[in-house]
Amino acid sequence: MGTATGAPPRAREPGFADCYYASYGRLAAQLNAYLGDAAAAEDVVQEAFLRAWQRWNRISGYEDPVAWIRRVAWNLATSHWRRVVREARLARHHREATSIEMSVPENVTLIAALRKLRPNHRRVIVLHYLTDLPVAEIAAELNVPRGTVLSWLHRGRADLAAHLRNAKEGENA
Amino acid sequence: MKESKDDEAIILPSLMSYRDIAIHDFVPPPAGAIEDRAARRRRRRIVTGAAFAAALIGASTILLVRAVPPNDRQELISPSSSPALTTSPAGPTSGPELIPTAVMLSTLDLWDSGAAVIDGEKGGWQLESLKPHCVNVPGAHPGSAPPRSGSRERTLKKAGAQVWQVVHRSDEARERLAMEQAREFLRWCPGVTIDGVNQPLQIIAEGFAGQESFIVRLAARNWVFVRDGELSTQILFQNGETLQEMRNVGRKAARRFCHAFTPNC
Image (cartoon, rainbow over all chains, first blue to last red):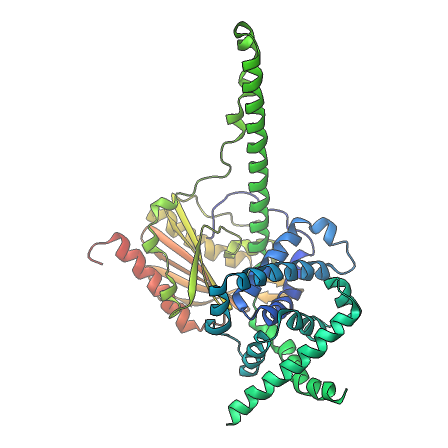
């Protein structure tokens, strides 16, 4: 059976597993919408939970521990995205070659459309519509004025709607 | 303003549908795997910190010794000032060199393309890691598997899917005993509580590969056990693989055991 350590089972952090199982899918789906890459999304979410586990004594006392994990995951995702964009070859690969694997075809269309948005626009769209954060909280989290968030949301919505319209027309043609 | 409303009318159904459905595309690896990775990383940091501190002490000792007249040096160099004693690598060796990489599953055993292999990750996902979550356990735990001469572990990863494998090698008697202890674990732990919900843990298939094999199911997770001679493996699937697909992978694992150690396999 398994690994043979012979050691007594390590004490698990109380509450960590429940928080992890309850929020993993939601966070991974949000990060996937931003990164357009399911494997990278799962990597950053797992890394965020790993860091949360290391500080669980403190984080479990927060009013909303998942908010902390989400922020860490988003910071990691932003670094990941910057790295991908910096490396032009990978960026091309990311935009054109990486296949999108989702169980529902409509979600593949959405992810493909989100990938075409500018990163800031995509980020506020995901935070506002998939994470349910109000504009003021997004502004605080991104450290930008409220007006900037509203402007990014406006342009992001317009571009996303155009891409979805085009995709639909493409399907019907 | 009207344009904005029109745009929202187009994007909202897609976003809301994604929000409700996509979460099911991401099945979390067992929490134990995350916890073990975090604990390993913490241990590594402690060892690295100790090594750095020891190196610093060593360097200062050398500088101090050089600064002291030769006749007084012997008193300064005592056994307790030896930095090497605090920097030996932690943890038992698991003898992966006894298990050639050809014995391990490759990505092509599972998928056509676009997958990667990560070697060296250890523990936390095996059936045994469910122990803290077991419910209705009758008495004492049956005990851990016997020590092996060698173990090698890898993760096979593709977008949205991961499969974990560990291969153990010792002698045939010990590997047989390990398989029996896995069955014993299931008799001891008929179910576990995950996310507040009781889930049964049961064998759903047997005798499809190697000299002995079985598949254990827990909700969306399946552990495939295969033994052939002095080798055994445990493989975790959680990506909606069918029973037939998992049996096939189990057979591929057994074939790899056979080809690696039996010339006329």
